[in-house]
Length: 408
Image (cartoon, rainbow, N blue to C red):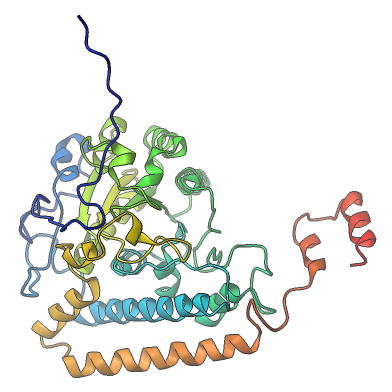
């Protein structure tokens, strides 16, 4: 007699109250993974979708084929950018708790990914980010004050209240307007990259997505078009182990890795230690070079851990152990790069403490300036009449009528 079928639902290894144990995570030694030629065929590097590319050892040394991509001065720029991102996140998170804004999303523990990737890009390249890549903007020189004004939705909000607080947008700085509908970033990035190739331009695109959003159909549509037309695009999956409240296994059911999904489309795919700034930069630079030289798309899975809550609307304590982030074996990206630079004699504990204090003071000063323009709880807001502006080149009659009826 045939047994009744059983419905399978993946379960995370640890729940609240459990003791986290990541000993089962297979981590190759730093420097163990070889760096292939930039024009390598996808079928010749299939193994890179199952391992993890690492550069920094626990002692702070950079080893292997992927090492040496950054000078000490360039690495210091990256370190300071990460410190700035964390300080900015801290202040804006606090502002939300004080009722000064409605919503905020941190990237705590993931700073190396966006900061290193942005450092590998060139001016004119376009990112299609999600809401956890503020490091792309903060590493590109975008005004912090403008970001804060948008978070506060005040009178100087550069987007005039047309977006959620953390959904930044800047064409000048290569940051496409964030979409709340996840996975759209991939198809938009591929389309932009195809257009760049059609025009004969030299600029490439980068798409960003989280592990949970790879289950969306847009992810697969983007992969089809990227592979078919060899779009000059880098497709980034930030695997931080958790979607809003479900672990990454729900999006893949424990089948292979996220990077391995590139194999079915013939796209070169790699996994990288997302908390290793040097490794992220080296892999990003490799993939960007591939795209710019016409070798087509690359899929990168950044293996990291979301140390904070999904957003200010989330409490991770209800679905994972409180100390799970402390047990994550890849460590803190800022501490790791600091250790590397101190080991090389290019940095010190004293200079690091001073840099943190200076950057914190700068962020606090900018926050005070932004709050003079108003916050969610006080001050002036963009005028309601602006909802009718910058939507159409020429305002259609029905909107003119609505504006008149509203007395705007």
